[in-house]
Length: 187
Image (cartoon, rainbow, N blue to C red; front, top):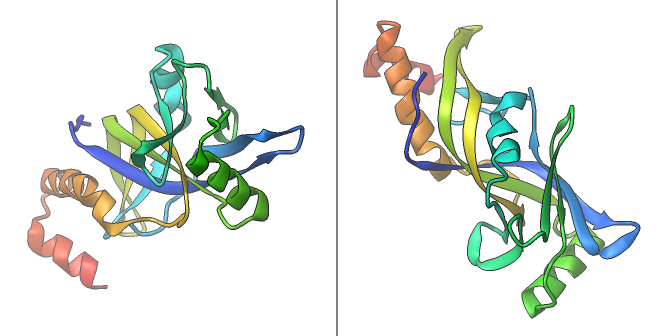
């Protein structure tokens, strides 16, 4: 439908220490064709083609800790972050630096204290439709900017504001206004 210039984050995947190399973290940063939880009046599905741009263009994606750009765990350009598209989703392999924060994260992942993954993106193309009276957003193409190892693998309400504006534009094309949207939200 339309591209947005704003950045969105989703918390969805899982991570673990590589059993063959305890200095590497493997995870699933994005799960395809899986409906999200309610993101504030709509649900979202990431389609497999949505990550093709990052793979084909060899995008310079960073692996972070809790979306904190001062805690870089890996980077595709440096060869310390590998992205792998599978039938299930976007897999990652991170070779973290020998820094105090990276050692702390490795220990927490190994213990199972941290097990979540997330991703940050900008939508290039999406499509909206209604299923069972609820709006559904399908992300068809995105600019993947980062993947993160996260402490709380849950959706953040503040991270979906951009998508809510896209939802409002979709509702207008269907003849619904803000009143309809508020009624749906109140359910």
